Image 1 (cartoon, rainbow, N blue to C red):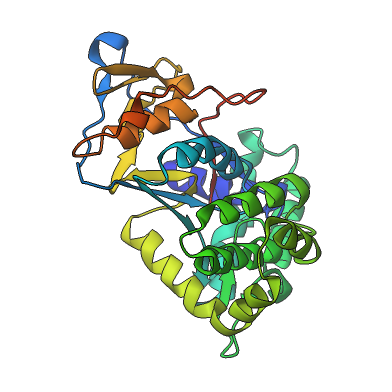
Image 2: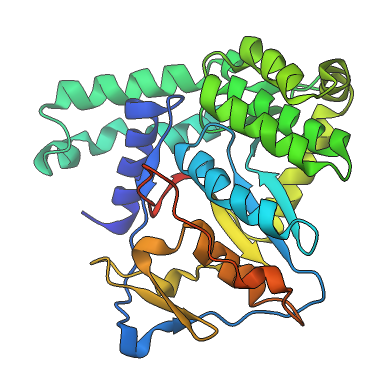
Length: 315
């Protein structure tokens, strides 16, 4: 199948299989480094490093990275900055947007030949159903001027993205309260009940939920536009994406398709299966200090019961 046809089919799967339920794409890269030629993490040093992490509020891989970053935050919050950003799409033309996502029924014969569908009828039904679902404006956040904004797992995820930014801005320097809120959301809410679930979690975390609602009603679209500006600046499409002092972590070249990738952070070697663990993320942040604090000597444990993943949610 030609490259452009594969992209079309990927769009079909995005909508037909899980347009609003979530699309999880396993990360796959070409390079195959070994411990003797591991990719070297080259940090940009500063007095107070900043870890930017780009997520979607109900991407499971994004939630996993939040769980991994939390102990790093707890250890280094006085010495480094940890800043969340959220991934949105701005839809200029809904029909064009949906056609690009739903695929082309004219290619169904090729999809059937490639065994992606059992029959022409199955293919046509899947594409047509995805297109119709995509056209439903209720699935998007809509501004007063008619501009539509999307988040991969549906409107409630988009709403929650905004609320989490409002909460971030509300807490000021007390970011622990925000992290407590995120932990409760990840544990108790979903992309299908967030609009009714979030408030209880916010109150339990100690947030002023009335102020979050006020922020949402007043500033949602300016917040979304700002996040789109930032994700565009850094060419971010997938959740999670991490930048330490604006350096990609890990670099794509640190992954190998067979899972044997490795990365040298200072004098310490991390294997591909550990890239998204608290201690390896800590090492990347600590390598980015002009002078690392003594807390960087602390070894953080892996998360209990969690298998680190190289997957992501791709918008």
